[in-house]
Length: 591
Image (cartoon, rainbow, N blue to C red; front, side, top):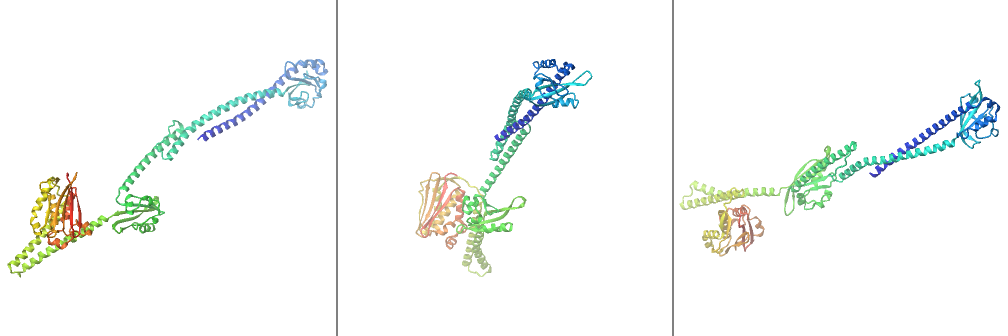
C-alpha cells in the first residue's frame, strides 16, 4: 500500500511539474515577447519624440549641431539614437562619430521605411559597432511638404532585456517551485487520505481470507471509500454469520455422525475415502488416520465392501445387501451403497451406510428357537394327555387301577403344562416390567433357612449334607421378598436336583461395603464349559432327560437372571463338569 501512496504522490507531482514547466515556458515566452514589444513601442515613441526636435535644415546640412543635439540623449536614456539620411548616410549618432560609421541604407529597418513606405521599421540583429544583440526601430522624418527627409533610428541592447528576463524567469521559477512543493505536499496528503482507508480495507480482506471473520474496517471516511468500507464490513458480518452457521452445521453433523450406531463412509469420484464415522472405524477395526485419504482399494477390507463400491461406480445405482463378517463374532450388517451427487446432479462419489443387525438376527434366531422350544415342550405333555384321554374314552380300559394311573398321568401332564404357561407369563411380566418391585427390608439368612426347611424331604431322600449361614446371624437388604424367595428357591432346588446321593450343598453370604454376595455351591454333575454361556437361555437344559423327569420347565434360570437384574444385581456362574457348580448372586444392600 506504501507503493500506491508513493506512486500517486510521484505521478501527481510529475504531472504538476510538467504543467508548471509548460506554464513557465509559456509565461516566459509571452513575457519576453511582450517585453520586446513594449521595448519596440518605447523605442518608436522616443524616435517620434526626437524626430519632432530635429529641423530640416539640420538634416540637409548634416551640421555639427545635429550631432551635438543627438549626443544630448545619450545620458538621460539608455538607448541609442541614430539619424540617417535618405541615401543611408549616418548624419548623427548618440554613441559614435558619424564619420566612422558605414552606410546604413541596407539595414532592414531602414529599407522597410524607405522602400515599403511603412510608418516604422523594426529588426533585431547583432551590432558590429556595439558588439551585442540590438533591437532597432526606424521612423521616418518628414519635411514641411510631407516628404521623407530622413530617418531617426532608435536602438536598445537586448542583453538588458535578457537580464531583465533572467530576473523575471528566476522569480517565476521560484514561484512555480513553491507551487510544485505545495502541490507535492497536497498530493501526498491526498494520497495518504485515499490509501490509508484503502490500506485498512485491504488489511481487513487479508484477515478475512485468513479466516479472521471478526475483523472490521474502523476508518471513518466519507464518499465512495466510506461506502466501500461499509460494504466490506457488511460482507465481513455476513461472512462471519455464514461461517458460524456453517460451523454449527458441521458440529451438528459431526456430532450426529459420531453418535450414530450405523457406520458411514464417503468416497469421492477418484476412489479416495473422504470421511468415516466412529461406528465405521469400529466395524472396520482400523483408526481413521489409516483410512481417510487413501484409495478404498488399498484399505484392508474385512467386510467385503469393494465389490459393492465398484458396482455403484459402474452402474450409478443404489444397492443393498447383507454382509456377514468375522469368523468368531459372526457380525451381520445390512449394507447400503449409493451414489451421491453435486451440482447439476453430477455424481461426486459413493456413500456407504452399514447397520449392525447382529442383535436383530440373534433375536430372530432366539424367537425362532423360542417358538420351537415352546412347541417342543408342549408337544410331549399334550401328546400324553391326548393319547391317554383317547384310550380312556375308547372304553378299552376296564381295570380301575389302570384307569386311575392314566388319569394321574393326564393330571401330571396338565400340571406340567400349567407350570410351563405360568412360567412363561411370569417371565414375560418380568421382562416387560409389568409388576413393580415391592421393596421391603428382607433378612436373607432367615429367608434361606425358610426355603431349606421346605425342601427337607428332598434333602433327606438324597442324604445330602447342607451347610447354611448361622441362623443367629442377620443380613438385611432392600428387595422384594417374593422375588428374592423365588431366586434363592430356584438356585437351591437346582442344587438339590443336580447333586447326586450323599453329596453336599453349601449356601454362604459375604457382605461388602455396598453389596451382599450369596453363593449356592454343590458337588453335583457340573456343567460343561461350552454350555456355561447358554444356561440362562429359555428352555436350555444341560441334562435334558433329567430335567424333564424332574418336572422342570427349562425357564427357571432365565427367570432368576431377570429377577436378579430387576434388583440391580448380577449373577455369576462357576462350574466344573463332574465336580460341581457355584451360582453367586450379588445384590446391592440399598435399592
